[in-house]
Length: 391
Image 1 (cartoon, rainbow, N blue to C red):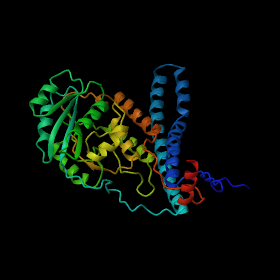
Image 2 (cartoon, rainbow, N blue to C red):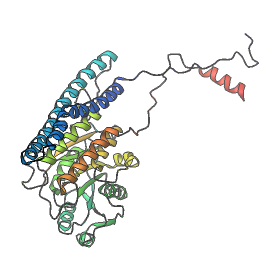
Image 3 (cartoon, rainbow, N blue to C red):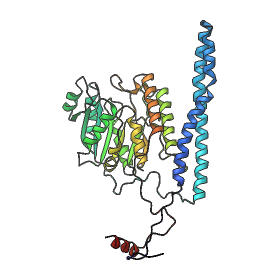
Image 4 (tube, helix red, strand yellow):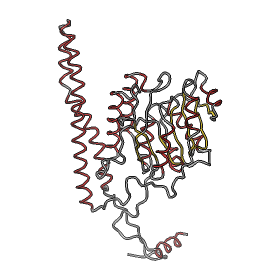
């Protein structure tokens, strides 16, 4: 074989296609089992629609009563089979995770579940962004409650096209009012995060609604935990902290728990049963470190009512640490405009949350973990010789 004038021709071997890591296997397995749970729930209740149709044929009062009974039984079977499938999926993931880690020899992570990812601890200087839509009855009290809390350097109200005196009352109470013309809770939150980043004196951003359901006194809890995590979210499913008559009835409590379980399956961890212990992904009271907001804000894109789980999806996808804490939840002041306005609105929002969790595609850039080929890298002197020969 003849050599060229610049020495023998050396070709870099093509890299081999890498095997999936244990984490990647768990992620794929989790997505598959999430779909399997839904299919099992539907198949488990599939016999009842047939009986439903048969009972419609002799349409009389007894047939109508029987139809209603079958409809209730169908819903019960759907929930029961879904729960059975969820338990089976979680057990399978635990066993699979242990097997894959033992097989690949991966050691347990040295990072504790509550360890923050930022290099410097947050000092607790907070800017509070309050989202509001026709909250004239409550906004004055909410602004005063949060602006007087220790550590709050500024209070911002994001007015989302209110038709009442919400904006004027918020200004009178001492808040900075920002108008967001794009209608939707998610758009108001996005604008709140953008405006909060302009307050350089604060290193923590707090999102909260202006309906009077949340207590400013709970900011002390967020301050205590934000030094240990990137995001701290509240949970409204703790007995004793939920005021009787609030919006967290049986339907919304169990609905939030179910959606939270789905999100934990989506980011499964066989050691901690999920990337975060979540029970209420719909809670809109949360604190985020400034550096975490800067990291995930470009990827936040949902403008409607399912923004809260969307933020958690992006945060977990980007590897941020998340802690859930119990908070006080009170009866709202005025009329509800969100998912809790009616059961059907809540059902639509819940289904949108579940669909978004199942169809979410990872957005974070793929990190370079080093050479994937079994062949040794080209020596620097050889690479320099090839480069000089081409010039």
